[in-house]
Image 1: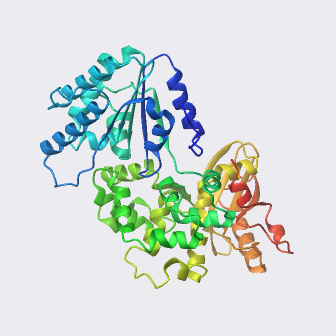
Image 2: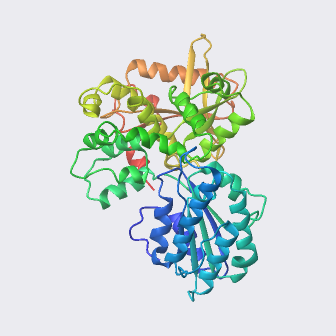
Image 3: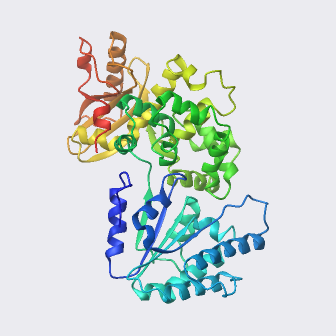
Length: 485
C-alpha cells in the first residue's frame, strides 16, 4: 500500500492498513461532505490492488423513470465487471441479484490474497428506490463474501443521510455487519500547510488562514489553486471569474440526495445570520414545520459537516442554535449568491471594511473548528461543556461571550475572545472595559459555579500588543498554535 501522495489522514490510513492486513473479510463504509476526498483516499491507499470498482452515476430528478434509472446503473455495473475480468459473453444483469452473482463469479476466478471491492457513490448506484440493491448487497455479503475471509468491501457515498439510514444504521441485511465506519473530515490548517508546501506554494500562515476562511480544508478546492498566483487572485478565480461556481454550490447539496431544495433553503437561511438560528427561527424563515422533518434535515446537515449545533445559555432556557460552518458555502452566500459582483472581484473587496467584517466573523468559526488546538495549548485535558453565553450585568447592560469552556481538570471557566487582525491585536481602554464587563456579567450569572476561577483567552492571528490594557488577557493563542498537529 502506498501513502506517499496522501496529505494527513493518518487515522484513516491506519484503519485501511489494518483491514488490509487482517485475516478476515472486512466491510467498510466511508462517508463525508462532497469533495472531501473519499474516493481519492481509497484509490491512493489501494491502487491496483482494487480488483473491482463500480461508481454510481447521478441522474437529475425527473430525467429518468425508476426502471430506466435502475437499468442504467446496472449497465454501468456490468461494464465494471467486464473491466474486472468478466467475459463479455456473459449476459448483462437485469436485476441486482444477477449483478452480485456475476461479481461473485469474477472474484472466485481471482487468486489474490486480499480481494478488494470498491463501490463508490453507492447512494446513486442504488437509486431512489434502493431497497432491492441494498438487500442484494447484504445477501452477497452474508451468504458468501463474509465467510470467504479474504474480501474487503468498501462502500462510499456523499449522500450522508442515505449512508446513515441504509448502510451504517441499517436494520436489514447489513445490520451489525460493518467492521469499520470512516467519516472523512476536511483538512485542518496544519494539513493545508502540508498541502501548500508539497505543491510549491510559498505562503505565510496569514495567507493560508484567509484561504481557509474562504474555501475551508476541502482538497478539491485546494487543487483549484495555482502556485503562480497570489492567494487573492486564486480566490477571485474560484468565486468571481467562473460562472460554474453557482453549479458547484448546488452540487454540494445534490450530494445529500433527497430533499436537496429544502437543504439549500435551510443553508441559505442559516447563512443569512452568521451566528445561526434556532429551529423555530429556521421554521419561520423556510416554511418547514418544526419537528421531525426539520430535525432530520438538520441532523443530516450536521453529519455532512455543513452545519454545527451549539447550546446558547443565558436566557430563560437553553437554546440549541444551528450555525453554517461550511466555509465554501459561507463565502459563496456572503459574496456571490444574488450579488452583483463589482469590477475587480475579490481584489476589490480584499482590505475593505466589508472584508474585515467577514474576516472577523469567519475567524471565530475557524478558531472553534480548531478547538482541540486551543485546549491543548491551555493544557485542558477534561472539558465539561463548550457553549455560547449571553446575559446581563447588574447594571442591566447586555453581554455576550461566543465561547465558554468549562474545564473539569483545572476547575476553571475560560472565556474566549476571537479577533482577526492583520498585525498584532491592540487592546484599547474601550476593549478592556468591554471584556471586564463580560467577566463581571458572567461571574454573577447562574452559569458560573462560584467555586471555579475565571480566565480570559484571546485567540488572534498575529498575537497581542503589549500595553497597559493587555493584562486583562490571561492567555493568548495565535495562528502558530492553530497550525499545530
